Image (cartoon, rainbow over the protein chains, first blue to last red):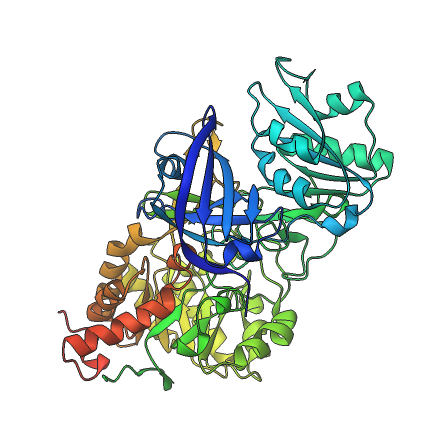
Length: 260
Length: 301
């Protein structure tokens, strides 16, 4: 039997933790118990005009109590994420998960790991920080406003970069590495494509393994529709071309495995 | 319990519910959510003679009540398909319909010929995909070309042939008649409607391919109308599809003249849709005291 399930989850609570950034705790039946850091959920709007499930990364897992935390950004007016932001304690939402592969925590065991997040790529790294058996350095990049950064402090050192210089290093996560002369043996990263590209180049230069979490427009979320592929270096096992499925083969890939 | 069996070109399905090509892979992924044994048939994603990489991303985008896709028929090619996907499907008690795509008549025929020796029940010939530059829809928008390719494919086919029709034509009955004249055994319709979406923030197309095929509940009235027209223009059995998400939707198509129905985009927003539709049709038949579903096919004149 598969670990994936479609469930009606109960909303335990939701709060706004930044401009358009929401933190949502859900009670699940089996999904939380089976979830791993770096995996994601599909959330259904229940609105017939907004059909496709919204893929949202898992921020925290409380497997014992069957609870999951999602931190997501509302992407605009009349969007599915705006609908989710109006969910209150006691409401329900249809979810499918856990989906995707997650970060390979074993690869970092006993090593120095960089957890590098950019913007709404920060949330999946929180549970990663909690579970990874490694010396954690979290390097978090934001436009201006910070969120979740303090929650990383119990798991390791935290460095912040902001585009406007209002907090931490002025610039991006790469600038924060240089400014603070940081070093690691392994990298786990999630964020916008230009950031992932820079991190991939840095990892190559330093000759350290790096895993990145990719994003792409999805439909089914389970590997059937082939909507969310990314270009891969090796021939993929599904279609025998050079297209890996972000939802099923990813979202986490070894950086050298994908073309950015 | 009412009788739900239907027959397509001599192939008996336990019920009229099947999957729409391209939305269900070869059943492996959705097999985790539905019991494939409960379905009338599984229609596979299009397979060509060699692997196709498909289009650049973004390949999918949402529209009001529907979606656009421009996957571009990414597929592993017929060899991998026969080694991996067919043995998987053959373990189930359901009929197997292989969707065949190609860029030339020879491409289609080579896949059809290769499948002649395989345990497959029906072949669906995709001459209506709007997302590939060569082949595909070029055969499905010209009645002469459609009749000619149907004739050619029939020469190589061991299984009955379903010709899948495009709605992107002036008169779909003309296409249906051409396929019938070419020797098609069954017709399926509709494939997706060509559409476009523009991202006003990025000032570019929402899809890398610029255009995509529109599907989902928003297209259903068009599809029902076309099934009705075709059912009244030819004598071939029809597989109806286009926006089916519930048993009620499926029954509309059946009453308009479809012998069977395919569920496509609904799988994306409800992975259990196919099985739920099977149960919903059974419940409708019982509730309405209809002893045999065949009584409903084309009952609305």
